[in-house]
Amino acid sequence: MHVVLGRDRGVLRQLLSRGAAKAMPAYRLYSLDPAGKIETAEWIAADDDAQAMQLARETGGACELWDRGRLVGRFEQGQPRSP
Image: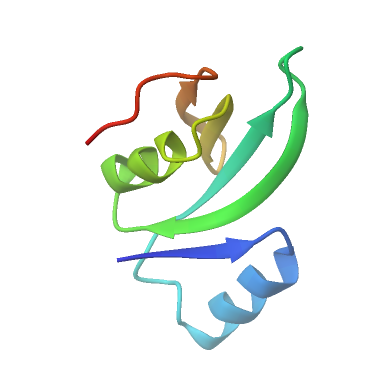
């Protein structure tokens, strides 16, 4: 199960206050421009790192996936997607 929480921290804050997201780690997905700078950011929820990395790969673009202060993975533009 995965949930895209969107770009608004308020959405995550509301879910956490209700206990809805406590069972699932919340990851931050940063889309990167060609210079490697952050273009957009969004919260995603996934059961584990592997599922979060799969969701990040599905974007097809350059991005970084973070779990709080821990870099989970960095994906380059055009990197092959997992089946």
